[in-house]
Image 1 (tube, one colour):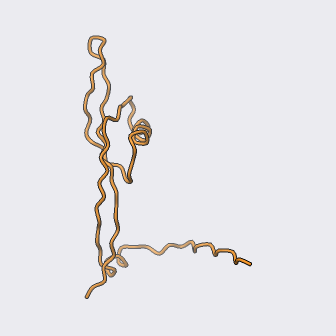
Image 2 (tube, helix red, strand yellow; image 1 turned 90 degrees about the horizontal axis):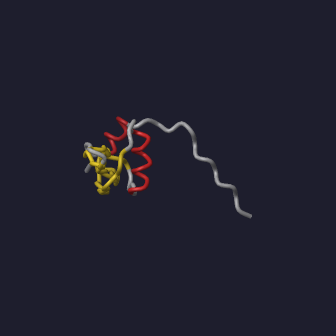
Length: 94
């Protein structure tokens, strides 16, 4: 029997729009959805996407979805790299 590793990954799909003015009135132009890693709030998505786009955008929806991924340990070892920095040792308690 092959040993398997599992990992939960949460991605947030963000609905975003660019605000345009037509005849002096604001009109939202829907942009393609953006996928961000993690469980991202609307406020955090707004900050992240404000940096990504070269024009003002408005986030009008976020939807987080968690998926469980599975990979055999053998395949993991084929693709993974060894972490070079060793974890710090905890100080001994008296």
